[in-house]
Image 1: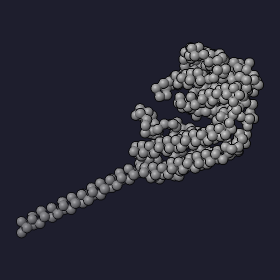
Image 2: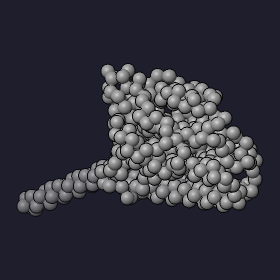
Image 3: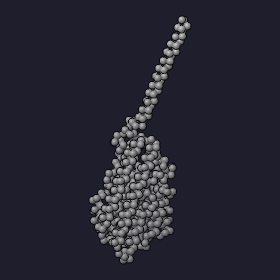
Image 4: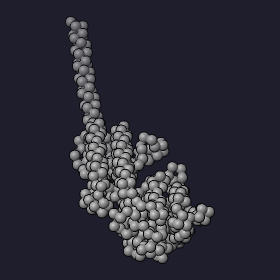
Length: 462
């Protein structure tokens, strides 16, 4: 009997131990499941809860994506406009990656306003600089030089043709494009242009910012530097090449001074008897004293009556804005170029004028039908430029979205949202391209003055 009681006690003890063990196991399991669930929720929250993502890093004072042709034209050129992302060397890609990684993580639960702001910041990096139809009109004006349909007296043939090139020689012209410095590329283009001028045409070369350095202690010296290195005369090869070797990129950018000196250079060439053309080439804004816009206006109002061509050579958005203002103040033409080809094309316009002037001197008349054909080629070039930029922008945004998604900065849903936004911009650019090209074609048969009025009414200047 005693033995049986002992056996019962042992069995009871074993049962109690088992029950306690099972209870502990369940409790541990529940605790483990609870922790796992908590971790999953936290992980999900990290990805999907915008409250954990700092969207304050997004810039709010940037343009919204365009919804019309005029907005597309006015939208500023993006930091990475002109590149082809997938074709960049790895070192160059890293710079783009760094900017993309500055964008904050954004989740599926972000508000429409937050997603729109993220898109605006992304587009701002890659938006291309779409040519203003006004630029086409300005090229038509150059192409129609000497035609009786142009009322502007500056574009009528005169007895003499004088071209002065005012070249930026500040330190930033040491920057490289495709393995050569901007100064080397500029000198090559200028040499090619000057050597192509017909006999009887005159050319001059003035430089600015070529003394001192970019340091504060040399600023006064540099801001007072602008020299005529080749005085107005017929082109002479050895002397001109010698003039180009007299200076190197060095200091600050005194655009105001350079324009003032150019006016002095050409003061004796009255616009009544002389066709005067001035090319101002700069790769940045005025960094010295004075008001270059006011100086440009003074130049335009002078007896010289020059045709002013302002060329922004690889210039950022701020520089483009100022240089465009200089061109507008001088009733001139502004063009932004990013490589030597673009620079040479701008000098080519003056070369074309010189050739027409030479033919006019030999009693050759303009063929208005030929001018209209040339305009059609310009429309085609305009269309190709817009189309190329549209494809480049679209391709770059695709690559950027892929990178952002792979780096877990955006989710799949956000990637799809931004992809739709990208497509909307592509479709807008397509439609705008067709609209502007059709419009330009429709007014080609009008006189220049009629075209000018039509375009100004439909596409306001920037």
